Image (tube, rainbow, N blue to C red):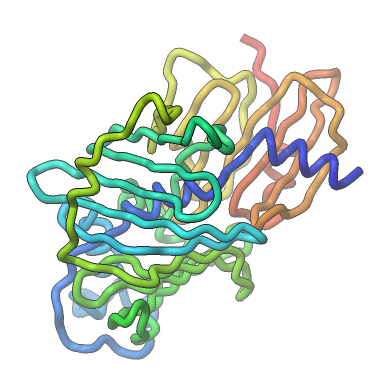
Length: 338
């Protein structure tokens, strides 16, 4: 029974490797070389006006976020979550006044994602398209990262932990950990010279739940791939959106309780996406019932379902939250009578 339930949930709410591939590309930065940061710098020192430049965790966050519009690069990265393991090839061109990007999935069904500024189109092979139901998740790899994390910085401790080496490059390690246990945290490995995010871990009290990591990166790439035409007769395509709130359709439910710092960042019908700049989760309501109340983890993501009373539908919470937080969210969902 549990296997059947999880299978049905997976088909309804497929998050997929493509979502991570798209959002990871927006975390790049343009940092200057400088002196070596201390091995560990407490976030409480951020209130000290003398803590500036490379000694300040927010310096690295700002540099990381700015590179989406400034850095040109190509590389190969892997994304691991639960049993899901995917390898991607990315070419990102920020020259010429506009951002162009291609992300090619190297294993499984072939998928090519093309971005030009805010327009994102995902191409699948028509002979083997795979799953077309996926979204772009907002999180620590989105363009809105810097704004959201600055607004909710009181909910996290930002700590620098010296240096390391990723993809044969010098990196700075940055820990972003929640003050309370109502959300997950991140460990970031940021390229010392450019600010590019080379590796990240989603963590829950020390337990790694998902990994993104570059294995190689080139900051002087051949960007001709971005001009390669895609044969429309051999592909099926659909648009994706980073950040979209449909003002014309209102959800039929409300979430009465949210952890501090979270806000709606994307809305489409009865599906709401929330983020505090670090952690993301989705809440959606379906009219059909039949699934039991459930609280579990699937491929590194928490899934909680709850049936509303009087045949009013079933609410599902999916995302990077502890099970107890997701359960409290589900219990706070109420239908809206317009």
